[in-house]
Length: 263
Image (tube, rainbow, N blue to C red; front, side):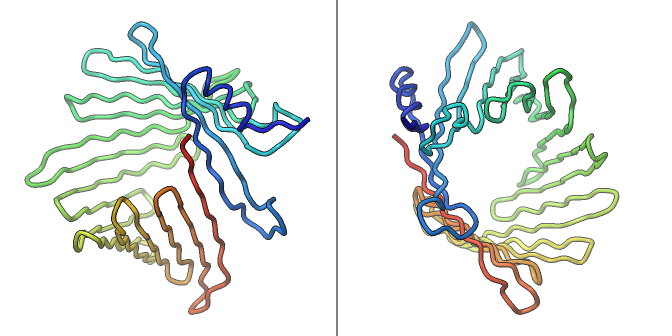
């Protein structure tokens, strides 16, 4: 007898009064039947233990199978606690049912100082840190200045992102030892936003977001001689279209369609 994650998590949802979420996505490639669909289901819940907030969840395949152990795609848990002005949390996630190692995220936020620090890494037999970053926000005139230094220990890459936000304009500069880029995002009116990006390598890209109302939108990103990407959000539907570009020729298109269903 074959089982699916839908049946398994339906029992979990009833037992814990949670609301699972079904997501159906079209897989890349050509398929003659429903094998092209990639349904998955996610479920999460939360509780408290003393002064510690606990969250946990699972994402699993919704495909029929005889091997229940193959259903989970990821299992995660998160614990958070407040220390004075600081709010800290630790999140761990394992892929499938492999508990030998887990991806770890440690976050610390201080609302009084408008400062946040994030550390990511892996934990198993050994604990290793892969990335560290901090975000500091400063009120400046009519806008907000954001300073975001980032350090990748795996690749020894270091950069800093500096942003300045006003009512309708955002300027973001990303700088490292080897490359720099500038993005200027401008809200033209209530429905249209454009954001050109220029890099020190000479590459240019342009993003145009068109609001369709009710949080629906179409976002088109043009990267000359590289690609045109379109993301269309319509209620619970999300469609992504990637079209590689070579000169003035479009080399086919990759389409992904996703639908989310809340029970």
